Length: 122
Image (cartoon, rainbow, N blue to C red; front, side):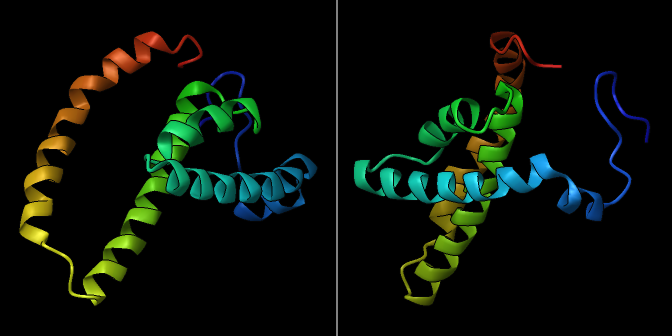
């Protein structure tokens, strides 16, 4: 797949690990993830409200890249939480689906609005 203008094509996963900028970013992202977890638990809010601004301000991500990265991180933590609560017998999958499926269906309608608010969007 050709790279977009202004972007380098990534030929192999291994090339990232040899890239000094990528190697410098890894510890920063790990610390950012830890801070997001602590503050979201402390304030009782979702991690995205903390992660997106930190990814932009601290890690130098563009807005769309920060939103997508935050969603990926939320997916990982949501899966871990679902497994943990399920193991404890606290998971009501049917009610979770009643909330989650309509929320997922509403996501495509908000994507164009988010794109119009993010000037760095490709």
